[in-house]
Image 1 (spheres, rainbow, N blue to C red):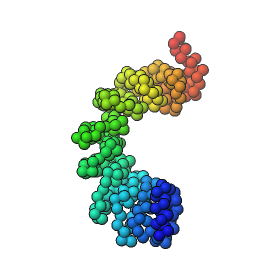
Image 2: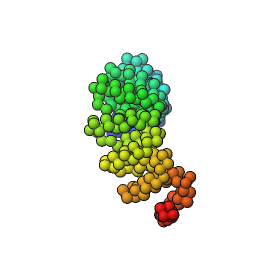
Image 3: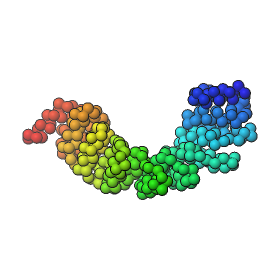
Image 4: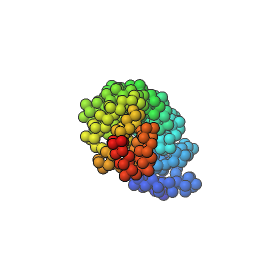
Length: 315
């Protein structure tokens, strides 16, 4: 009883660190002999509980003839999601029916997220479609779209984005960003920019993630001029180093070394710090035609960069 009360108190106070310390003693003494004790142990730990410990606790419940409820199963699935154990998360969902318990949106979302982390897009989409009666939410769709993105399935990602209307859900920035990333990796820059336009039409705030993915798609299609236009649009929201780096990479791919160097200089003007990616883009753009400038950039020698640029302008 004291262990059960302790677990329940930890659950209410969200003290999952205490749960982990209590579990060792409780497991040894087999003191967790009620649904309250087992359920509180798993629920209090939630996603922080190691998946091995969560599955062990669930098995202990069954061995003690204590039937886990939907909250207990959901917490166990969340632990598997945190540990990127997608197959085990699906197994947990399947076991719920053995105890006359139906998955809820929370448990399904955790399983979809586990599949997304492991690039299991087919399983993620199957879970989403199977959860239709559970009213999937924005997280359900964004995780499934992201799973398609990570697996290079941009058509499926777009299909899910369009299906949200049938589910009476309005895509948010996260859903759009995942779809933009998916189409961007395909090099279909027109479609990517079209999705970016949908963000604006939906009166949502486009983020650095949106612009970076769109610019990356332009890079693959050697559309550096469009990439620069996107950079200027991004500046009206909030200048971001990642967006600048993407634009520099696009210009470098288009052999526009002068523009790359200009963007590198512009970073300082907008009070952003150049990083390794910034300098690598500039060095890569200059190394073939202007090795001296590339060396100065590699050394991050501002004075030498200025001297070489002056010599190039006034040979």
